[in-house]
Image (cartoon, rainbow, N blue to C red; front, side, top):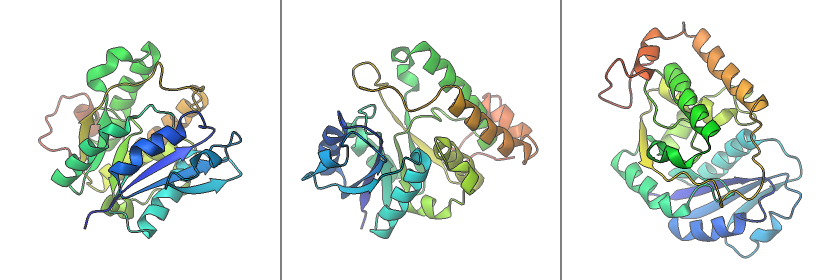
Length: 252
């Protein structure tokens, strides 16, 4: 029997996390919130919501807490885990779309796709997303619609197959590394169209450092490519110069 869980990493999200959890709980079997060293009472704000809260005093970063949350969900019997942010940038009302896509292709990682709503993004974000789609798609050996959307559904089967080196997990690296290593395993990607939610939804400064975290992600993808001979076919596929009949694609 299918048992989808939601995983919500949170760091100082007291203004929004309770609302996100309340809207998510009716749509999945269980909600797990990993409080990554919040100092604003994030964990306490979730009392009586029904969510499982994993509280930590030390802030390790999103990647480590995602890995912890995935393991907790798998241990509790999750067949799929939907990740969404605690800052309301992702709409819990979209969860049924992910579940429907998962039902159609149970082996695929289902990714949120904001490409049809790019005009509602800040200009700098649009440029970063377009570059990331190309660069990460090159390394994956397939064309990717939205490599940086954090709302995703990971099947338990995919999570159990991923073997990501520890150095590629920390900070914001995990979500990119998950695509790289999933593509290498031949795990397909599917997409759910989403609205781009920025103004009026995110009520605190971004935890993503544009310079530091970009350089870390750039280093991750560059290392991955160099160790695999730069994957010239992947370069052509990321540019759309070679047709892809399937999301599985090639990784050469």
